[in-house]
Image (cartoon, rainbow, N blue to C red; front, side, top):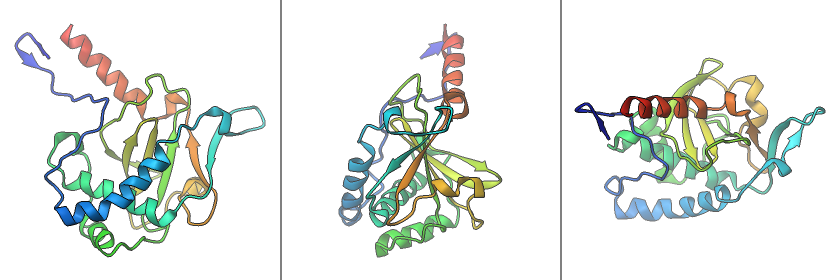
Length: 208
């Protein structure tokens, strides 16, 4: 889109973005098993009716049983690694630094790291105003700890890329093997989505 001869530079996407050039055929074969399992886990609709609630009825977490931690963590790390080496602008905020090689080594050995090394915290906004939008990955700090965030339809996945432990307040939500795991429920105004949609509205206003 253009307005007054200038182009709008902010990319807004509502579908997946992929770079087919970053993987060799052997890597593709390695990642297929993890991608298949990740799709099976995250394509299942989960809503308010499954949430554990507070005494005043506020949705707190959505439990998930029988997750295969070893496969799921390798799926998430493989997505994060692919985002870090991809040349498409959509993924430019992902920067793993020295973790890029460490994660690749784990993937190549098919070795799931212990839960505390790359802590995974899953979140959702149950009153999402614009469902199924996939935002660009980004980086931010939770309680001072650095996380890279991946976005799936109606879910956001925080992966710790920091030597320090995940914040104590979030330990319940850290992905664990052989346990019930949880998707943390965030009110819409405390989720990552308002900033994105507010920015989109501003850009649309500039064009109009």
